[in-house]
Length: 342
Image 1 (tube, rainbow, N blue to C red):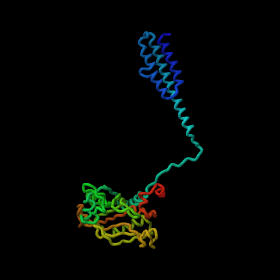
Image 2 (cartoon, rainbow, N blue to C red):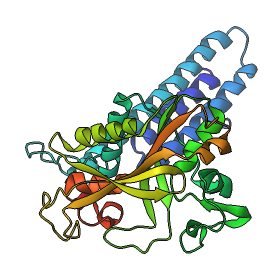
Image 3 (cartoon, rainbow, N blue to C red):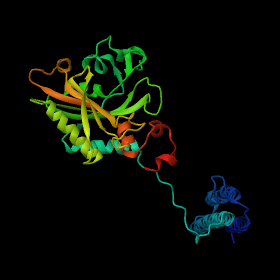
C-alpha cells in the first residue's frame, strides 16, 4: 500500500470515529472545517496527489474523492440525527395533547363606523352617486372662501377650527372635496365625499374633536329642491327602514340657499320623548340645501345655467342611531370587547 493510500485511509477512519462521537452541532461544524475546509486534512491529502506517480494517480485520486464524499455524507447524516433529537426533546418538553379540542383563533371584525359608511355608500351608489376624496389638511380658500364663508364668519375662529402653520388648517367638513371636484370636473356632477373632519369641540357623549362626515353634491340643469327632498327621503328609508319618518326644518348654511335641517323620528323612544332626543321625539340627521350661486362662481360654474343641491351628515351619529349607541366616545375609545358586538 502506497503512503498516499495509507494516509487517506487513516484520515477516513479517524473522521468516522470523531463524527460518531461529536457532542453537538457546533462540534460537528468544527469537524467539517477540520476535514473538508480549505485547509482541512482531506483537502491537504488531495493536494499531495501531485507527488504520486502518473500511473497510480487516477486510482488514488478516485479513492481520495470517495473518502471525501463518504466523510461529507457522514457529517450530513449526523447533523440530521442531531436535529431530529433536538426536535424530539422540544416536543417532549412542550407536549401537546392532540385529542383536546383546539382553541379557535381570535378574528377581528369590521368597525361599526366602517360598516355604517359602507351601508351609506351602497345607498348612494344605487342612486348613481360616485365617490370623491380629498386631503384632510386644507387651505382657507377650499375650506371657507369658496364655500361663501367670509373671513369674519364665526367658523373661522381659532376656537372652532384647528389652524396649522403656513395658512393651513385641518378641514372642518368634507365640503372642500366638493369644491376641488367641481374645479376639476365640468357639470353634471353627482358625488359623495366621506372622510374624517376636525373641530375644536369638547369631547362628550355627542361631540368629539375628530369625527366622520359624508357629504353629497348633485349639479345639473333644472335641479330643484324637490329633487333634494326626494333623494334624502329615499336615503332615510333605505338606511332606517320603510317605517322611518323624517321632517325638514328651515335652517342656514353659508354655502346653500335655501337651507334645511333634516330630522328623523327618534329611534330610541319612537317619538315619545327621551333624554337622547331632548324630549322632542326627533333627532337631527343632517343639513342640506340648494348650492349657493356664489359657490358656483368660485369654482367656475355658470350659476345661470347650473343648479344643484348639497347635503352633509355625520357618519358617527348615523352609526349610533343604527346600533343604539348613546355615547360617541364608545366608537373611538372603546376596547375590543365592546366593538366585538358588531
